[in-house]
Amino acid sequence: MKLLIKQRVFSWTDTYDVYDEYGNAKYFVKAEFLTLGHRLHVYDAAHREVGVIREKLMTLLPVFEIETGGAVRGRIEKRFTLFKPKYEVDFNGWRAEGDFMGWDYDVYSGCSAVLHISKQLLHWGDTYAIDIVDPADELMGLLLVIAIDAANCTGNN
Picture (cartoon, rainbow, N blue to C red):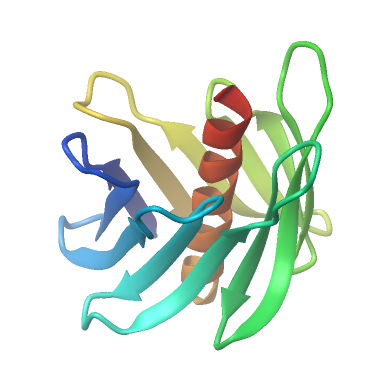
């Protein structure tokens, strides 16, 4: 299965629309306005909050916690590197490998691929495609991608 994440270009905050492979709206992501650090809320198609991504403050490099159901499920930490971004992923027992700068990377659980993320070129605004092996990993995969995107944005500011 596949999800397509499209960032809204003309928005006061980080806002994303998420569609399935058939073009149906699946999720909506909206950042809080005027908060210290990033705080992104993820809603399903019925407008129920299904996850929150919060930036931890007072850290040297970006750190984001991922919550579902009011409980922290894991975190993403950007590591210091000179040329290519590197992340420490402590989330869902997964690890991420690949070219984060070019937005082409894979997520693994043990030796098995879980997700493949790629940036789509020639779109208005940032657009990412997530290929998901198991539909049960859909929400967790989306939360991971949004957290890494937020860490990239924070690290580039």
